[in-house]
Length: 132
Image (cartoon, rainbow, N blue to C red; front, side, top):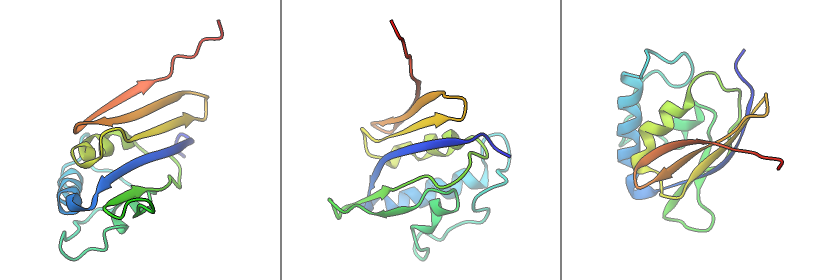
């Protein structure tokens, strides 16, 4: 059993970066940091033929076209249990994620942290809560 986490998704990326997204994902999955992940897609997606929204669905992150801007895809939710270090996946995908996007995480123990995307970089920030 994994660590329970709820996630609030605020992630978009341009449709014109779809091929680059798939290439980064395939490279990541062919040689993941720390060895092979036991969850998610194990084979490669063909950038020209795959149904794009299936890629992150394997990782419990459904994607849809943005309802406000038809030039973007939006990650709409996280539907699952944290089974591994998803931060490694998002760090790899950071170059195609829109600046200002973020994922807010709340762990089963009350921990709060965000994964932030800015200019192709990924940053993990933990909340500093004070009752003073």
